[in-house]
Image 1 (cartoon, helix red, strand yellow):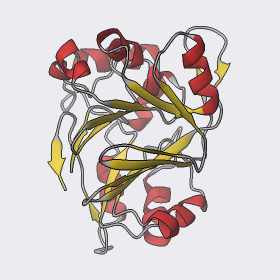
Image 2 (image 1 turned 90 degrees about the vertical axis):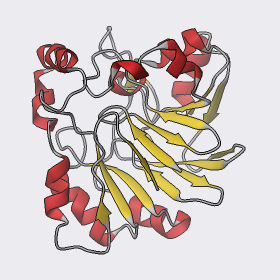
Image 3 (image 1 turned 90 degrees about the horizontal axis):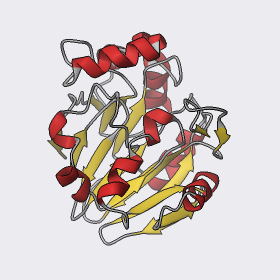
Length: 256
């Protein structure tokens, strides 16, 4: 399988199909232009939402405009909101629920985080509980995407039950656990071969779209606290050889 990073928390998982998690295209400094067009949107076979916040859902409409019948998997309350808005192919699940697809079984697992929808456009709409996902690919890795989360003992249960070998772990601080907490999770709760730091933003020098970074910082100055945090997790785990920290650049694809 292959993992393509397209932003602080947006990834594409490539097996027989292409699955995108947490679409965020406008104001996303980590998404190169070539992935923000109709051809790319039409290459996606399914979209998974961890929660409703704008930096995880605001790009969904672009994909739907190009492919209105695309599968969208979301937590129950958020799924109902999308259905009421006219999204055609929404598959609602809740914590512990799964969907079986051709090449992967995907299970929704708990995350410790809030969830609202359209919060930057007016009064926030309650969107259920935030979540992560287990992607159990046939004849390949089992991947744990933590979504946005604080440290929670649920991660130990997720490891014991699903036995992931790769973890994409939020580690930016401010709105999720930070590098120190994420390192604790890797050492005490997880037993993975690889961990990918997530929910971190690029610097002006490393951003594929530096103008978008400037606009995002102007609108949300607090983003500055989450810039260039990937190396912090690597440093926190430098004496822990059991798990390799894989730092994915923005727009970089890696095969596992």
